[in-house]
Image (tube, rainbow, N blue to C red):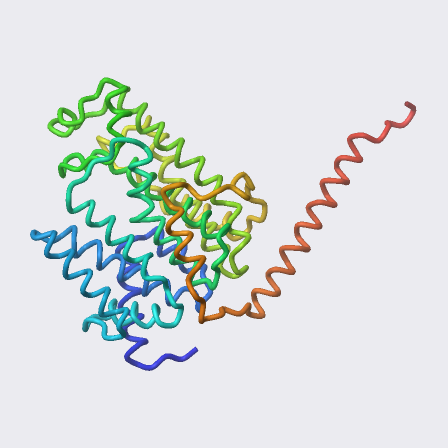
Length: 352
């Protein structure tokens, strides 16, 4: 599809923002079909703009007010004169994006601006729902999916990704005076949160907290997998890749003994390439989350996206149909191979 020059330039700017802002997300996005990849760039660029507007501003409350005004202008069809705003406004109109979703993201950024801490895992999940689960729900809408089951699993994936990021960035956040680990978990391990922030250092007790957080993320990654089947076939490899790449962040933290104070866990490029190849070729996924209710903390996102009127239908492409047929044939072949192997194991040996 050929775009007007001005919109094409805005999309190019958004693409540059994602390439420099998140290498993992950018790598996964390259697997998306173009019809999804381009609005995803617009979405990511606006989310990055929102995050930077608050995080890098000295007057955070004023920055939040300006950000809400920019969101309002985007929904009125009169966006701020910026590539990300213009591309986002076009995407909002085309996909009828429920306003409650970007508003939830901005609310979470407001919690960051307040320096809010989280007493319990539920409190942390509520934060993660806003800054990451909302993005998962928005991506699902861009793919033309409003099914509550798929949206719930997308929110699971977003929360899992955020927990992986939190586990990786404990030291970096602490040195900037920020703490996202559940306070009741820290106290249960004998860690005083204020003392830890004053002198961030790794201890076995802190490792227990990070390990528990990553276990929660692992369970959500498993729950999220079943939702991928509800997405258009052409979009599935990218979401598989994002799921695998972000999950690997937490596993790299685990390989380092859950110490994310002394260094920042990075997944090497060579391993990323192997993981992306696995995402492209993978078919079987865990089904643990199928039919599970949304997390209580993400239910409002699922409800907003599932109930919103849908004006844009993203129709399957020829590639989607061919890919879906290939998936069915490959699964049938795998079943036949498994059945053949089972019969070989149970057949009587000659002479028995």
